[in-house]
Length: 218
Image (cartoon, rainbow, N blue to C red; front, side):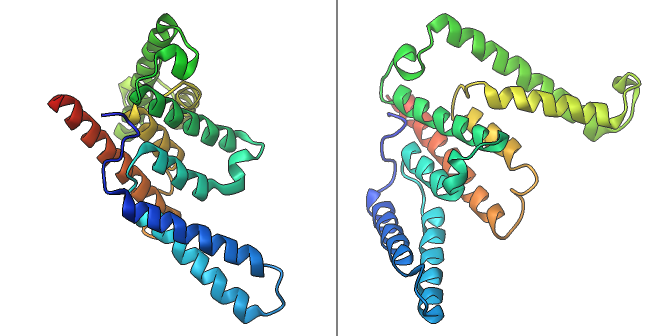
């Protein structure tokens, strides 16, 4: 199955996305209106339509990209480190869509097979280093810390995370790991952004299972 092949009926997603588009246009139409009551009603409708987009299962990786684009909004194109990470993640999803549709490595990412293999090895080595430092931090001070302070362990984790963000995610699991690191402090919240993060990560896990199952049946 191609990574961007619909895995659920598209009707709920298409309908939800259409409702969101209508609500967003309605908000733009009244944003400068002097009638506060009218603006309030339309704003609530727009927020409800947006929440429905996040809650509706994404049928494809392209749909996940749409959710992230809506969530990040104009910040996706802003200057700054986090915005640049967001754009890299969007690029990862686009590349994985192309690869899932049958594009070669060179077509999907501009990399030769040798370059892709080298970056894959770097990804696994960096992820292993991050996981080791995280394990040491959770364990607490011990001989394995080799005399380092907690801040040094944290700095090592931050450095590895930064390298992972810059590297191309090798698969959907890699995108999930990047998002987990990016949303580390908020993804367990039960309101606001935390809810959105859970819904998007749930989409990616489900799509991964479905794609792997389809490959096994092929």
